[in-house]
Amino acid sequence: MNNKLLNNKLHSIQINKCPFCGGTEFVYGYQSEYGAVTGNESLMSWQVLRHVICRNCGSVVHSYVDAPEKLLKWSNRR
Image (cartoon, rainbow, N blue to C red; front, top):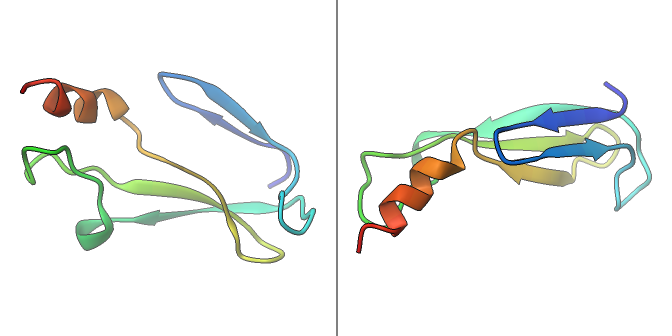
């Protein structure tokens, strides 16, 4: 998958080249359960951490969650 375009609610990111090896092919991967991202106050509002990975060298070139606003809600409730 060349020229990976990531769209989420906050921004779009164009990934054309791996900053580590110069590779141009990428795959998606994800962490869930114990590798999930949670807000500060609740383990019940976890989210999958998604990655864009270079197929050439295996480096994670970008990581994100689908709904970052859910994490912001928890951290702002103090």
